[in-house]
Length: 207
Image (cartoon, rainbow, N blue to C red; front, side, top):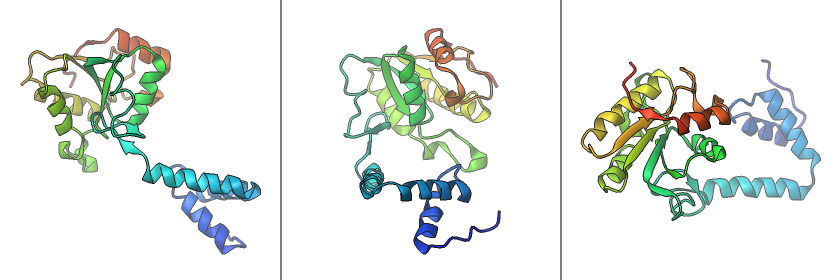
C-alpha cells in the first residue's frame, strides 16, 4: 500500500503508533486516529492514562500467571474454588473464555504459549517450571489440558504429560473432542467448550 500523505506530523505519529497494533493497517489506524481527534480532551486523556496504567500497574498472578491487579489473582485467592484441580491453558484469553462458560470451578495455569520449535519457542520459554512446582506441592489431584488441538498444542500436552509421570497420584485429563482438530479455544463457542469441560476424558496421546 502506498504511504498515506497526511497533513499533520502529529497525526502521522499517532497513525504510525496505532498501526503497530496487531491487525491494524495504516488505513484503519487513520480512521481510529481521526475518531480520537473528534473526541474531547478528557476522552483522549482517559484513553492515554488507561493505556499507561495497563502497562505499568497490571501484574501477572504469581501462582497461575493470568492478568491481575494484585500479586495473586481473584481466582487463585478465592477460597471457594477447587484448589485440587488445575486447567492448563495457552494464554489469558483462554482463561476468560472458560470462565464465561460457568462450568469450571478449579484453578488455572497459563503457559504463555505452546512449544513450537519452528517459531523458536522451547519449554524453557513457557511457564512450565512453575507448573511442575505447583504439582510437587501435592495439593493438585487433577490436571486438565485445555490447549489448542494443533500439532503445537498436542506437543505441549505430551511434554507436560511426560513430566507428570513423576506424580502418579495426579489424574491427567483433556477436553472432550467437541473442540475441532486444528482449533484454538478462542474459536470455540461457549456451549461447545462447556460440554467439552464437563465431558472431559482421560488424556491419551493422539500423535
